[in-house]
Amino acid sequence: MINSFNEFEYCRRLDLVDIENDEFQLQSTGGGGRLDKGDGVCITSLTVNGSEMLVGKLDDQAVFWIDGTQRWIHCKDTSMSTQQITIKNGKVHSSECKVPVEQYCIRLKSSSENCDATTFYGDPITLLHNDVEMTKIPTQFDDFKYCFDMDQVDIENDNFKLVAGGDDGVCINSLHVGDEQILVGRNNDMASFEFDKPDQWEGLVCNNDIMRTSSLTIQNGKVIESECKG
Image (cartoon, rainbow, N blue to C red; front, side, top):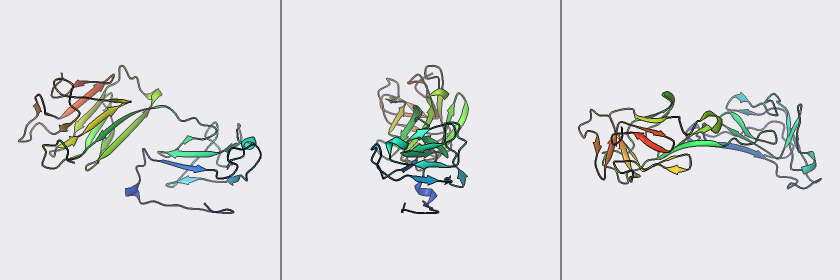
């Protein structure tokens, strides 16, 4: 952003943005964290994708300062001066008044590698948390991540279920839940597998080197249900 701006707008095409997972950060370029050097900028409004961002301790302030000068950085009931502010999924993710919340993420990667399906990208996959639909993983993804704040998750007891959504299979090259890679199959030794509907001509499969399943459920970092489990 240029110095002395009154109004500034930056736009990206929606197909270049993952709204739920991408982070957008405004950061001071002055002061360098020094005690008394730098020149702060007063922000009177911040809008992301048509929604006004409110900041501060109670998320109730439209006006705030971005400042790299250490002595001016603060978080008070009625004002905030911060070195940076990060927006994620339409909310303030971090600032002087907000420490980023630890998250528990589910991540899938897909490609044609180790894939028996005619096309690797297939139909959307539904992600459920304790039988409540959270999102649909879109067709033709190559790297997808969905995150929960840790206070929304009981790692030991919650179920995370992935369900095939159509008649075109999807090849999964890797599945991570939290910080752990999930291995599937009869012997829990396979990183790659496929999602597909049970009525397709190939059929669902569980053998020593291939698993083709219509659903997969994870609890406490382990597969508890799939074509090879339960």
